[in-house]
Amino acid sequence: MSSFENIQTTFNNALNKIENGLQLMFTDTKEKFDQNKPKNNIFNYVNSINNDELFIYLLLIAAIVFISSTVAINSSVIIGLIAAFIVIYFLRERKIALGDNFEMEHENKLEHDIFSTAKNMHIDASIIDLLFSIKEYKNYNPEVFVLLTKHIDNLLRIESDLEKGTMYPYHMFDIAKTFHKKTLNAVHSMIHSIPYSRNSDKKHTKILEEFNILLAKHMSKIKYLADKIDATTPINTASRPKYDDKVSGQDSIYEQNYEFFN
Figure 1: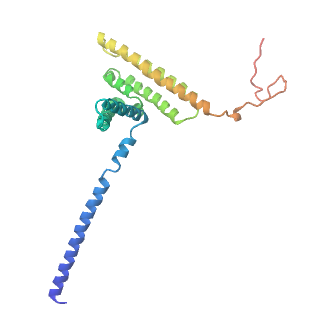
Figure 2: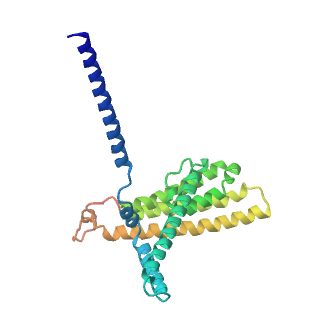
Figure 3: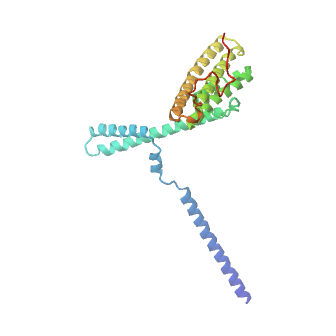
């Protein structure tokens, strides 16, 4: 093969590589664009609206169309629908934004060291806010404050376990009552560590009342869940005691369990 043919072959191979490279580049760009392009935006947006919101929005559409139909005759329905969808879109976006801000706010609070051992606080945002409002109490009595968060976290874990379904629901309820009592005792004992002032005393009293209300709500739910699980649990017939219809002065099974009476 002559030198000219070698040069021509090399040049053709280079052109083919450039062509293939450009084709691959544009193909990858298009595929990435198709992958990143939102799919079914309207469907997903509408599908995310729950039944309660949908009912309210339908009433809002009907009300706006009715009001607009009393003003005009021909274009009233179209104008009313456009206005209704604009209002719904604004309300929906506002709710999403507020929800995102609310969630982000409490996620940031959970990053604080007072929640370092907690794993179930996300169940109740009100408890997160309440504990965060007294975070300075940890400086006065860190040992009791750590116990306080642990007791609350354990109580919320019991509620979570009962929601998933668990054995021995009333046993779990009794344990929850113990954590409920320990939590309130821990909050109450803080009064001895907090530097006294009229405002601090007033704040502590209010905090104790709020803990009473919040924990009572959770204890009520735990009792409800325990009753619900127990109602659906069949009776364990294997646990029945052995039936003995004989009249005897001795118990054949527990013959050592007797007492003398004078």
